[in-house]
Amino acid sequence: MLCQRCGRTICPECQIPAAVGVHCPECVREQRAAYDHAQRSRPGSGAGSRMLRRVRGAASAGRPVVTYAIIAVCVLAWLFEIAPGIGPYVQLYGLYQPRFTDQLPWTMLTSVFLHFSWLHIGLNMLSLFFIGPALEQMLGRWRYLAVFLIAGFGGSVAVLLLAPGAAVAGASGAIFGLMGAYFIIARHLGGNGVQILVVVGLNLAIGLVIGSVSWQAHVGGLIAGAAAALVLVNTRSRTRRGTQIAGLAGIVTALIAISAVGYAALY
Image (cartoon, rainbow, N blue to C red; front, top):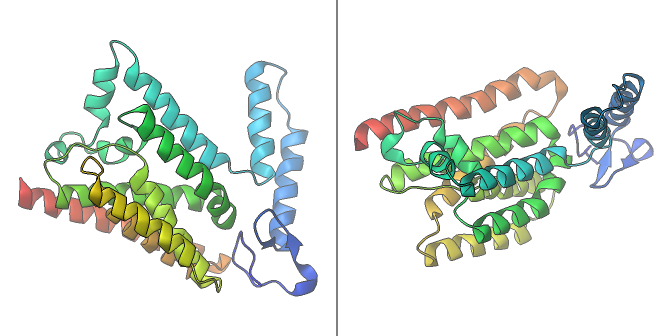
């Protein structure tokens, strides 16, 4: 059996049940040490301090803090989008329009956190709420965040190449990347991943049928997320941490290079 957090093999006697799968004694000790440290270094009694303590406690308890944070950022961004006076500026400098890639390159990522309607953000956040926590438990917070951002970036790159005249926003490309990562990890752990493939197939089909949905971002996010997961499952040993970081950085570098070449060819 493999630890769902670090990927190391655990003997049956040492397995510690977790919310998803099992954890090894080393990971459990790290979580407890982080929690104890947060309790010993408790800040003041103000509202901000209480919130900080809650976040630290949730993180040390293995709760899906990153998933909840992404949802919170998306909701906050949506409130800015609909706010009178500033909404148009948020969309202008946040939505991704491939023809402005050279002027507003950051929109390849900021667009992931913006949405076009209540229905748009509601469906995406519901999907993230269902798939995110389990995957965050498997990968750990920082690796999970890396997969999400790489998948979102990959979705924007696909839009640049396949729909250069579009204007896109939404977390669906990144969420497809999480689905792709989930499939890769499930297969690596011995599962068949058929259920996630069905979900991916249905969502891709919906994107093809509904004209307003950017299926290009879905495909790009799916490929980028799966590629990031392949790096993670093949470098899960702690002794290969440097190789893991280099592999993820290589994916980001490749996406940047593809963007530069694609933009030069199109514009």
